[in-house]
Amino acid sequence: MRISRTPSDTWDIAREVRLVAGEIHVWRAGDAQPSEILHRLTQTLSDDEKSRAVAYHFEADSRRYIACRGILRDLLGRYLNRSPESLRFGYTAFGKPFLTDDPSLAFNVSHTKGLCLLAFSAVGDVGVDVEVISDQIDIKSLADKYFHPHEWEALVALPEGDRRAAFFACWTCKEAYLKARGLGLSENLSTFEVIPPLPTVGEAMIHPRSAEAYSWWLGVLAAGASFAAAVSSAVRPTSLRCFDWQI
Image (cartoon, rainbow, N blue to C red; front, side, top):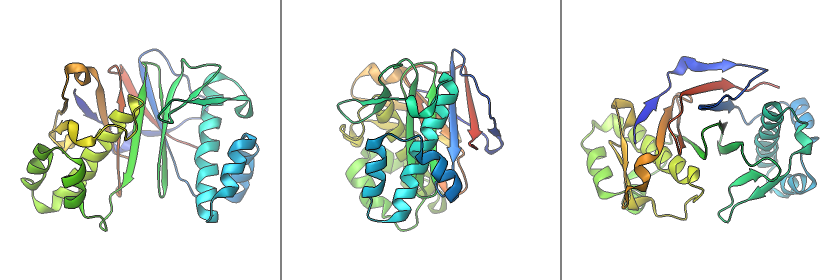
């Protein structure tokens, strides 16, 4: 599995977009949208989504949910030339959403505090993950629990100042791959490894327990200075385009 990196200046602004054969698009959006935009996005949500939004204990979490879900509907509507409120979602056994009346358009969403990433694919199943590069997380404890031993060995061989970014790069690659396969975290992250665990230094691959994973593709995204992000698909795309969302 090869990994490619998108440079930080490839996030474009686009209102009209078309997903052509072989492409993957990734959209970046802030989750703290102004009240007037949140109001417009809320109008596109289903009754179930609106109920979920008001069920959050904290208003900030409710607003983040409305933003990410509403933006997903907005973008799907643009790609399909349909009204966002007309879209109907189904869910796989592991909770991955799909469009019940147009399952051919593959998409995936990831959210962390401050940022939402949305991936759309014309090459098949797709997964995306974004994480805040936090100084508060004990990466050694998490690596002991979730990483393959070889990954931690490679991480500690790096200069100390590079380890945290490398850890989160590795983590997002692993999660994007599992999300593309529709497995979420149902599969133990330690059963396969990203080699090398800092994909920005060159090519990398997934070393699985079976040969199946070798056909999957990973792309590392430069989502922002304090974020790590990656996208994965069943087939290597002919192009990866990145956009900043605006309504």
